Length: 512
Ligand code: ACM
Ligand code: ZN
Image 1 (cartoon, rainbow, N blue to C red):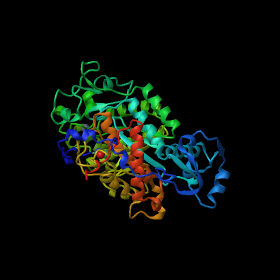
Image 2: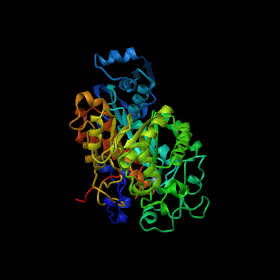
Image 3: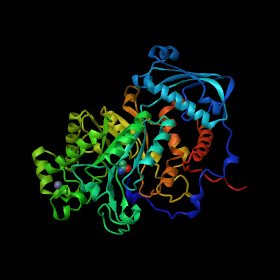
Image 4: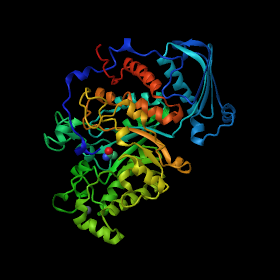
């Protein structure tokens, strides 16, 4: 996110109290078959089941594509939709589930969990359901502030309940490297630790210097060992969530340069661009490849996110290595030099059976042939990528940046005003995308950058309830989305999530 565009407004301490507690009496009443995300088809039948019995009813599960196709009654789904689709009949004494794949059974069971949690008397009903988009994601920035494994597992559990299926793990950035890399131990022995905890004190107030050695008293930070990551991946896998790691290049690398200064441009003090790797030096590629080999070894995801955003390119204009590289490769400008790096890393990823995702800046200087674009500076980058035949994940900041404040009364309100209704209003099938190109829209993602979000309870307060809106937009057909019923369902789920130990932002009920 662009730091200079953000204004920091003094937080009011009393907003700490803005949790879901104390609003119970004012809660709207649940309806008999409430769900987030709303299902494709729901037919309520007579009778109801007491919610605490719902999950203990005997389940008859059939995994058969033929059975599900019969239930679909001529409706055609893509392969990935079919995998996630389910038919479910909730009766007084039993539940029947039919799906083409385990994944569909999993989502049926999430619907049962959600219905049981939201209502005390669930209607007997039949549900036929499948997702609108294949990519339904949440990104967490673990670099600015590090939350750790237990926090992530807790959020993955909520993501699963909401049928979200991609966790974008922003592992590295200027203020901290967060993944064990055996070939480059300084990344975690040094640049996973800083002298002050709060990012803003470190970054803007420049308190305490850059980084400190692991084990320094009062050092703030941490990193995920490969064992931690294996545990997170297993937990996510059981919940049908793919974890996509992000290793930033060539910008957002202040920490990498602090650990290995030789990766900066060959200029005094590394040149004027302080956070960029030198794309001229062959050794930079060797470093990135060695890091990626270890990342690929741990993360089975089809995708690797290579960042690509906000690289300051000033140093490259005078660095002898960059200039030599531009000459030898016939590159006209520094944008093409960045593009050269991304293309090269894409072909390395391909050799390892991986595909790349990058922020929309990777369009500048020419897109790598098979890259998927994450459109964050509005939707223009996404539209441009689609016009060139590329896949896109929409995460426009005005609608999907969950670090923006929900309400001026909230704790540390920064950035734009992004209330729940605005998040809910975004449609990833952006105007201008033709039917023929619709398959290039992989889906939607909510991003929680953590420049101002240090405490786990604060992170949750920024995520919820807005992640509920991301989930419904990602799953529910556009014509079934409905703000008034969503607002009601979201406020009930907010209360339930609060009771489960999540911190959920709830607007205070005005005094009469
Ligand atoms: C970004 O917010 N820099 C992707
Ligand atoms: Zn250079």
